Image 1 (cartoon, helix red, strand yellow):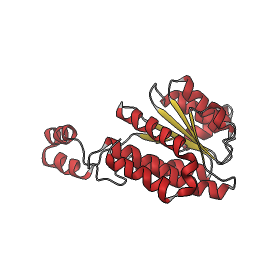
Image 2 (tube, rainbow, N blue to C red):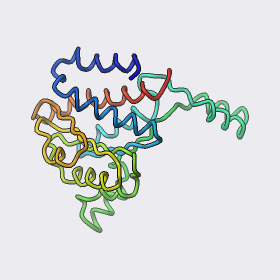
Image 3 (cartoon, rainbow, N blue to C red):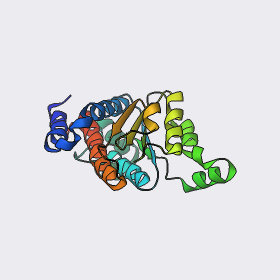
Image 4 (cartoon, helix red, strand yellow):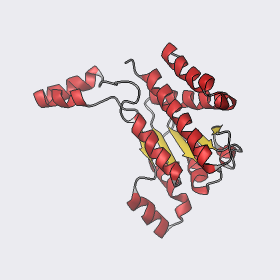
Length: 215
């Protein structure tokens, strides 16, 4: 772990003492995610309602710079310049290094078609079967821990050789039974769990970014 990353860990667990109870699981989730990215893996995220919005938020933090600048790697910059000259150089100067992440709730056409033609509870799992590869990560977010469509997605993830991480409330619910790692926010009230989830996934994003990028 980089010294900078260790500082991110201490900021969450020292200044935010109420989250000390989930240190071990949050660190494990962060390590799983960073290791996947380091090996060329990607992240898939799913949830319902506010948890779906949290998934979109996670993707936004990972696909561009979050706390770091993330300039494009030299090889990518050189390729753009070689192919497109000064315009390619301009493009390279504006783009940022990305950690590949996809929100499974974003494709309305697929979700509504699947719900109409099959059983909507399995729509996320269908996407996992199409997108996930061994070494990828699927994060399922559910404040109760009992959302069936999210649970089925995590089950599909493990069948594909992808790691399954759950973000839940205090009990973990049924997601805890199928996840490789379950990070349980220390509350049972939906709005409080969601508030904790923001801090937790910001930590996951910051940890991965710090480990994968130099600047």
